[in-house]
Image (tube, rainbow, N blue to C red):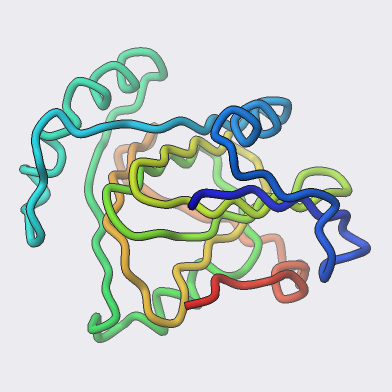
Amino acid sequence: MSSLSVYHVSSPDLPNKVLTHLEDIASTLAEHGVGFDRWQASVPITPGASQEEVIAAYQVQIDKLMTERGYVTVDVISLDRDHPQKAQLRAKFLDEHQHGEDEVRFFVAGRGLFTLHIDDYVYAVLCEKNDLISVPAGTRHWFDMGEHPHFVAIRLFNNPEGWVANFTGEQIASQFPRLED
């Protein structure tokens, strides 16, 4: 189940609130310019589907988002517990960073934990199958795929080169809960 846990930076062990209803999660995140929504595939997706098949299943939603927000590139990332570089890939995303562009992820399968650091609060968003999150450019955040990752996600970019992270050098990410497998 998707959830949003909101922490004050001074209390990483105890959330101020935990939300599990789509409307509550979406409205709380929207106060900070973060989009959260759910999509449904137009056709069933089978395990092992190619990038092209995954994109085709969500083409209508992707096209709408690309037109509305000017995204120029779309791809699919898929990781599972057998991926030979899972530990290195997890470590790459665990430190607080920000981007010069929006970070948009749609979870086709599996789950991941996006944690946003906005002012004096930390918003831990557990994204699961059918969840779309859109993190505005410049938002400090980190992503945890867990020790045993399992997710397929569509990624949309403003930048044709794709994901470029600017790490903050802050150690805040290590103080907050990780994705439990």
